[in-house]
View 1 (cartoon, rainbow, N blue to C red):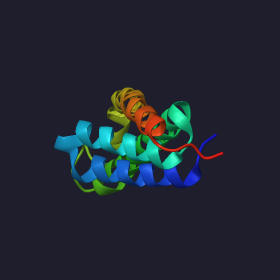
View 2: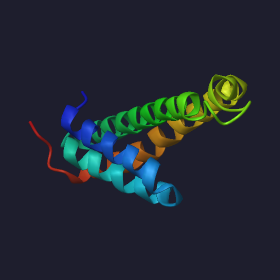
View 3: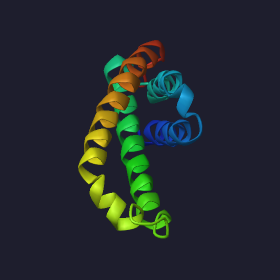
View 4: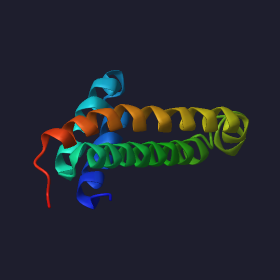
Length: 123
């Protein structure tokens, strides 16, 4: 079962790392996955689930932010801005989002399982 508070904190930290610390993304995801798993206090499997869920939500929200920026931010950027640019890059963007979703869920899930295993389990 997902712990809402742990997933919410992990989700916010994931967005923060994705937007502001992109060169250190892998290390940030490892740390955030561990924190999320530890905060869940649900054992290794619960930590894995909560961290993977936080990573997946972070990826989805980052993709939505990208779509909004590509659609509205590029409206005056010539022929490849706005809806035209989003339509041209639509399939490529979808594949990239799916790859990121799997990547975030796996990386954060592994360290979330470690954090969940180390945390005292709530009964």
